[in-house]
Amino acid sequence: MNKSTNPSAIRSKKEITDALIKLMQDHSYSEISVKQIVLETTLERKTFYNNFSSKDDVLDSVITEAIRNYVEALTMSPDGPLSVIFEFCDRNRELLGLLHKNNLLYLLLLKLNAVIPELNSCMDMSTNPFAKMIGSLEPDYLIAFNIGAIWNIIFKWVERGMTDSPEKIKNTLEEYLKRINP
Image (tube, rainbow, N blue to C red; front, side, top):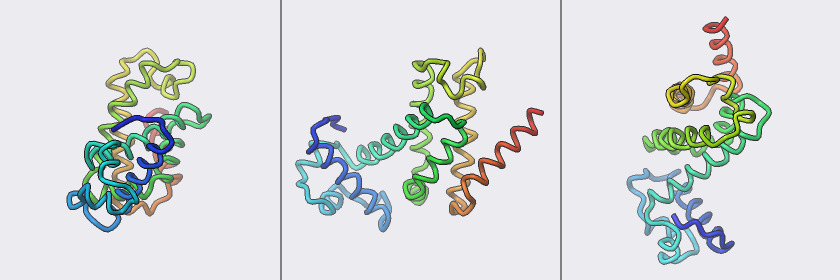
């Protein structure tokens, strides 16, 4: 993906990513072509390729932006990580549902597995929301454990149609954590 900060390029990228999301509502991801994405926009094919290399690059951009917003909220929020995670899920219901429908939720997990350890290694521990849980323990394994556990729960929530409230799931997890750590 081209990382231009030009306002026109930013608008074009948004139009392209919005077009992909719109197409994913009615078509399977595997059936969507770059041509279809371009036809959903007011842009030319050349503009698509000035900003993205493929439809996979567009999807990666959508996921990366969602994760960027998640990480920003995680580092800025006075609430605990569980609250931020479930607020993220609630705000991104459509994306989560579309990824699930297309068997692509694993892409979110892969992105988290890349971003969170990197964030942890360069973050001031006094503002790191996971510092209390990790302490002096080996962070790589604990981060992988936490990401895997929480996101598998979220995947289950998505699989079940996102009918339970995020607050209910968060409360269930908090209660469980109290039971295993009396």
